[in-house]
Amino acid sequence: MKLEQAAKQLEALGNPTRLNLYRILVRAGAAGRPVGTLQESLGIAASTLSHHLHRLILTGLVSQERQATTLICRANYPVMNDLIGFLADECCADAACNRSASDAAA
Image 1 (tube, rainbow, N blue to C red):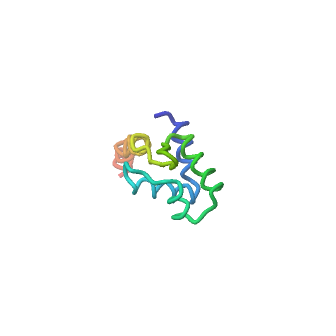
Image 2 (cartoon, rainbow, N blue to C red):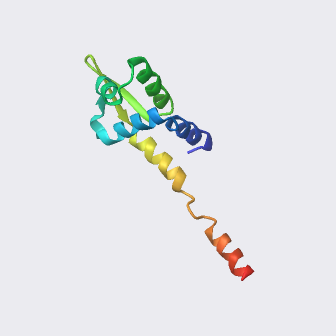
Image 3 (cartoon, rainbow, N blue to C red):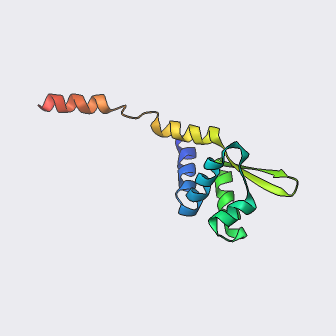
């Protein structure tokens, strides 16, 4: 994953309403949630929900599928896992350098 893509995804999740929305979709699993149910859960106007969903869709974190007259929203788990992996990939990579520096100082 590229730094720019991760930054856009994290920026989209940086809004409390979008983060709450995303967490609802992650909890929903592969079945996702209808837009109407999301609106009821969040207690926000349809236009506001549409705006927040659009931001999450643009970054690939959420997908939508029309089933007859219902619009189903789902968390895109592979994209979520890529973002989590990007954040954790180099966890403690420089720890050996920091440990060597502190050992040398002692």
